[in-house]
Length: 235
Length: 317
Image (cartoon, rainbow over all chains, first blue to last red; front, side, top):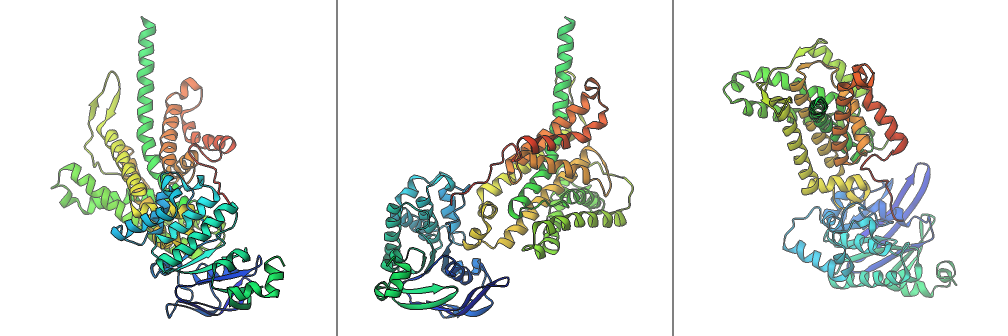
């Protein structure tokens, strides 16, 4: 579905990624874990065209999409939910969801997708006319994911969905991610600092350290790996 | 008895000044909208905006000249509408071209570079126009045959003034519809809140920015024609002062806030006219009206920098 091959990204003279390679199989949930500043977000930003890759290739559904602009990728079903949620704070919840489906006709399928989002996140339906900035952190994350679903994606890249959210809601959100993957068959690339959560939710994992993949294996194996346990799972 | 008469006279005069201010203010509002919309999507002040206002007046003049054979066959409301709409289209296109040539290459550079470029663009347009149109005042054609509308009591209102006000408000309502009721308007608002997120939603930010420039410039052009209809003498530097005042209006309303710009424009127009009208009682020369907007600017920057309707930007992390 998504294949990254030797990706390099630099911010000025600082090298953020050097030769990152990873692969996400269709229908899977794959996670990318690592410490703060390891390059997890940068990897997603490079894939979705928010930062320029200085080297390497990104393949999506078999086609080279390296350095394609974000608005083109959304149309092709690759959607990125950025770190910090980035909901449109002065727009209403409904307007945010409409923005998610910006490229789509508002037809019956659009309507049924909207209903699906309300089905998994009923709280959004209760707050339709409220401006998004007044939502709690967890609700904003729900909105960010719901908004992404409105683009009718085939592959969803989620950046730190647990960041700054009440623990109870984190659980709900991860359940919903699994549900979306199961029900809609949407492939998920999940970036998380919370490695426990991420490895429990995913089938395969990559460990990123200072811009390089140092380890990758099925998530269950990573959870048992002493090196990973010590560095990322709290011993 | 004398008291009632002088009170009535005072009231009449006051209402007259208020109306005059409203006519002028509605034009400032049209220009201010362009400043505020461009600020909304690009976070910079397009100092060449006042010159687009001037170009609007000149395109009105030349269209009227070139299309004269056709326009004379039309009833005047149709010919006014035609000249107005064509000027708006021409200047809208010019706005898009200005953005594309001058500002787009600087998109990822510091904002100060763009700001300085805007001043350069402004001077470039002014002096190019001086070269083309000449530096002298030119009479603006009478698009609307003038007649006094019999007012209540001693009020004098001309049909030109009423048409200016109605047109300005109609355009503002039209803009409101585009911004609040269309897909592109939604994209404009989303882009102004978070350009990264809007691009991730599939918005081609470049297209929306072009559209915003086009829209703002079209409104400025309409402002130019309406202004020239009220004060029918135009020259290449006519955009500077109204442009600056409209900029103040946008700041007064809260830069980036569309209803704020409209409100700010009306307030500046009214206050300016009142100061001119009551300059004798205030004990200042009437020429001081030109400074009123800037006094307001200083006050607003001291006491409410976010403007009347502007919100302090705040985001949950």
